[in-house]
Image (tube, rainbow, N blue to C red; front, side, top):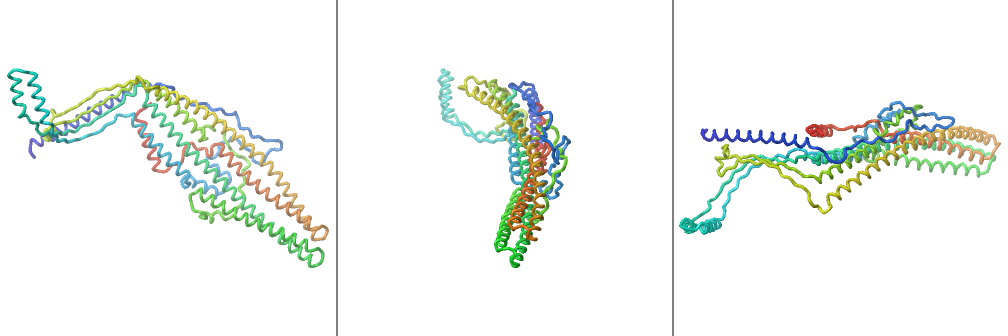
Length: 537
């Protein structure tokens, strides 16, 4: 290799290395200056939400079969029903439900926005390289020389004027490469407040996604329990249909024997056909409920019929229901956590608006090589650099900055009110759920006793009708009472289980404060953690 070219290549590499070192040193210094500044505006203080000393169980005289206790519950609260099918459906919600997937995509957008907001905390570096071939105006040069000659005067001036017409501007080849940096020294905390608000918005989006998950889990539990209740109603209707068919056969035998009129036969047939119609309606309800569960898992209608068709009894609530302690509610409820994050963002926005009233200082720096010949680009004496601060101070903005500050302050007040309203609403939902769970158990106890009496009354009426002691009207009335009592018990049993799911939903769903995430989401979260750890607040 040509020794001259070898020397120039070495000089070019050396020069670039030196300029990178200089720029990185400047970046470190500027970052230190920015972090040493103060942050104007209010600092966020996490509110202390109101909580009662204990949950009001609303137990009346006589008590209930299933009581709530302050024990630590299982985060997977649906396991309390001891139903493997329900557990399987709930565990698939997080990764198969479309509403949860959509909320996850919205959260990913918030993470990307946080990355963009965090970029302003660091110096911006850019590398540029350019080549320009220029031809400047010869006529302008000649005019300038002539004017200079007139200004000078004398023989020298006359000489310039005489020779100005022969002056020409040659073509210029300009080669340039450089690394440029720009950084805002965040003396007043504007950039930090902006990032703080973006981080709070990300937390709100995260809790919003968790809220969607909890809502979908509760919806799955309600739909599943309703399905089992409808299947139980269907079982009761089919059992009564068989009894009514036997009663119809008995009425026909007695009619053939001349013991009763055809009124008994037609009355028995009418009751049987009414129950048959009810069975068709219940079968439709069961099919629709299965489709609702399929939709929750993002699958086509009928795709889960195979695993849901096997009718089982309505899941039974346990005698002891662990619900934790009241002080943990604000840590679990995603809507409270989300309102807290919104309030945090609103406070940070006030600080950002206040920082806009102060001077903004920016440092610009650049280092590179510039030459009219590519062969000379690697020499050290071809270097070109610049560094210097710029400052801007708002003097008159027509009230824009003050209006923005007032807007953010009132937004902070609104967020504080919304937080308080969210907390009170949460406690109302918890108290309502506790009342509903307790009172429905007491109602069910009364219905169970009524069902036992109805079964006894129907048995007596049927035996007496067989013996000819009563008319069919007594059997018809007793059988209608029995069907109604059985249906009400099944409906109340379903409601008790659904109220327990409602209670857990009011308490914050599961007791997890994190969301089950996939591997790509873990990688993105890790990247954000690394970026956030570079600059401490």
